[in-house]
Image (cartoon, rainbow, N blue to C red):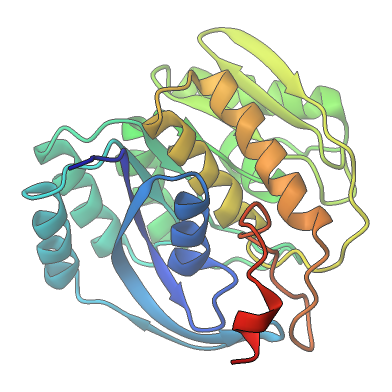
Length: 273
């Protein structure tokens, strides 16, 4: 008999497998963490884009959360894109009820192209309900601009934005992710009044579908394993870099990464039998 550390992803389903709960569960498995999922929405999407979204009713999301927390209590929780205020309130209520720990929130609000992905009402509810519950949030540059209220055009701006966000949520650490043509592969963590840069090597790979989901679920996995937040961020960035460097090439658009790059290659004879 054996046991494992556990992690829960609360996010949408990506039918093409590169982002959302599929990316999260692959990442958790790669870290030898038992992954569970509560689905907020079904999406019809692939490497070219999203063609449809079907939100889960809030009461059914609540039932999923009850089922997980009353049986296999997660050692960490990752929250991804949640499109409605009603769903956000349900998540906040259940996480509070069950005293969830090691909560990593990827505040998905703005796409890489700058398009808003959730309504203003949902953004306000996210700020009011979920961010105060999170141990760490992982905004990209556009999302950090929304949360901090300042434009970000330099590394100094990244630091200032992280500090402004943290000042509004004193119990929540802030990891502002580089990229978006600024501080590529360099992320800034502000936690407990201290800032730390995590420098990375930019990997020339256009197949970056699901990078945000993967990083946040890797951080959650490492927190579940008992690493400190700075250690978890460092290990998560290393994992993400490896998944990108594996240069998986699938699909006709911005493809997914190789989440299983650390898994031993199967015997060729088994592949063709």
